[in-house]
Length: 77
Image 1 (cartoon, helix red, strand yellow):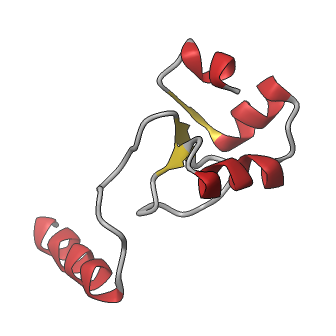
Image 2 (image 1 turned 30 degrees about the horizontal axis):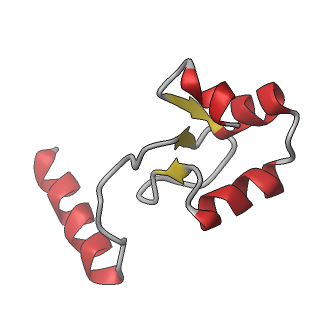
């Protein structure tokens, strides 16, 4: 797994599964175990970014934080 991610700092979940021949369910288990990281602020799907280092905002998306994030996004438009 680490060899697959060593050449690129970040890839998507689908590509990582194809490269390693590991089912997505097992890759998600590695996320839970902390071996690989995803951006918790984005939709979890096959195109979700996966990395060996933490990616995305480094705070847990609580309802208040999500609401704040949505308000900031609306203000930016």
